[in-house]
Image 1 (cartoon, rainbow, N blue to C red):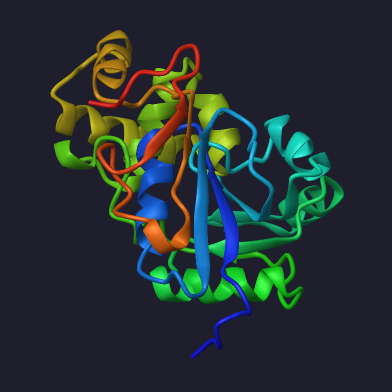
Image 2: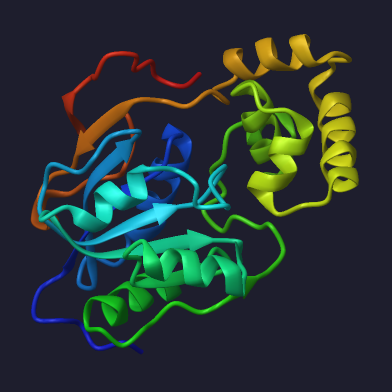
Length: 243
């Protein structure tokens, strides 16, 4: 068991999709003695000073987004941590050069993730390779309620964003044949047969990137992480609640 720190580690959860950040925050909620999620950010930089910025790599496995550099340079962020399915030796080198401090696998459950974040804050963890099955212990991802697996959801989110199959393969570190197989499987689940239909389906089902910021209450008053129990600092331009 990880001993509780002198105070909870303040964490911001970051990704482009609302369901992703809310799912991670909900997973950490039962461990207020260890961590306190104080901000959720989708396509926005944290405004609250935090000990750890937890960057979920859903749709960003290749670490090619410029916001990583902004997060690493931010005076509001203590340590920058990836929450990921895949981190190759090449990506470890890239992440380290861009100021990332550690990487944590998505197979961690809530207790394991909370304990790992404490260790990251204490400087006890580093960047290591990650290679595991695409699972989400958060049980929260776009398209889940309609039968999409985590990997299918990631692929369709990228299709919705307008990426080609080759670009998706590069982004996810999958072969082109694997990408095509996931797309065929997802299309059957979604009940569509063309890419344009898939894009429209994705837009209608929360697969498009979201822009939002949520500030959460202090640890002693924190409630469930849901649309009804958090206070939105601002509904930024382009924000629409996921359906």
